Image (cartoon, rainbow, N blue to C red):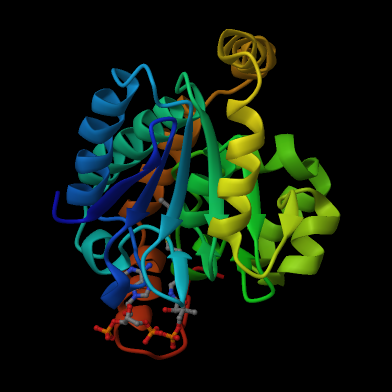
Length: 255
Ligand code: CAA
C-alpha cells in the first residue's frame, strides 16, 4: 500500500506506520481507504494480538486530515470524507486486537482523533496535541467531538476544540490523552505489547469488548458528520483552508 507501512515485530505484534512524512502524515481519502482495507486484512490474522500505530519520520504522528484535499470539498464530499474517517476509526476502536498509538511528534486534528481511537497512547517529549479545526473554519470530523470528551472530560475537550490550542506531552499526560511519556514511544509500545501478549488472549479480547460496550452506546458520530459537512458551505472554510495553503493568517469574516 502506497501510504502505509506494515511490519511484524513477531508473530503476535505488528507495527503500522502512516507513510506520508512529506505532508506530516496527513490523512487523505486514499490513506483512509487503504487503512480500511488493511484493518479488514489484519483482523483475519488470528496470531496478531497487538497492533502499534505510528507515523513515519521524526516530525509527526499524524498532523490531521489532508487540508489541501479538503480545501476543494463541497458539503456532500465533506460528508463522505467524515463518514469514511469515522468508519475507519470505529474499526480501529473495535478491532479484536489491542491497539497502541506510538505518538512520535505532531498529533493534530484527525491525528489526535486517530490516537483517541487507539486503546492506549504512548508519546515522547516532542509530541504535541491539538484540535485546530476551528482555525480552519471547520470542526473535528473523525470523532473528536465524542471521544475527546470521553478521555479528558467535557470541559477540557470544549476548551481544546474551541481554542485549537496546542498542548505538550506533559499536559497530555496530565489530562489523560497519554498513558505514558517515553523517549522512544515505539520501543515502549513493543515492551507493553510484550507484556499484554503474555496474558490470556481471549481474556484480553473480552476485556476490550466489555469496556467498549457501554462506551460505544454513547458514541454518536452521525451528528458530528452533519455539523462537519455544514461547515463546508461557509466562506470561513474556504478562507481557513486557503490561508493554511498560502501560509498566512486566516481572516474570518462571519463575525
Ligand atoms: N494537510 C495537508 N498538508 C499538510 C498538513 C495537513 N493537515 N499538515 C502539514 N502539511 C504539509 C504542509 O502544507 C507542508 O507542505 P508543503 O511543503 O507543500 O508546503 C508540509 O506538510 C510540511 O508542513 P509545514 O511546512 O507546515 O511544517 P512545519 O514544521 O512548519 O509545521 C505543523 C508543522 C505545525 C504540523 C503544520 O504543518 C500544521 O499546522 N499543519 C496542519 C495541522 C492542522 O491544522 N490539522 C488539522 C487538520 S483538519 C482535520 O484534521 C479535520 C478533521 O477532523 C477530519
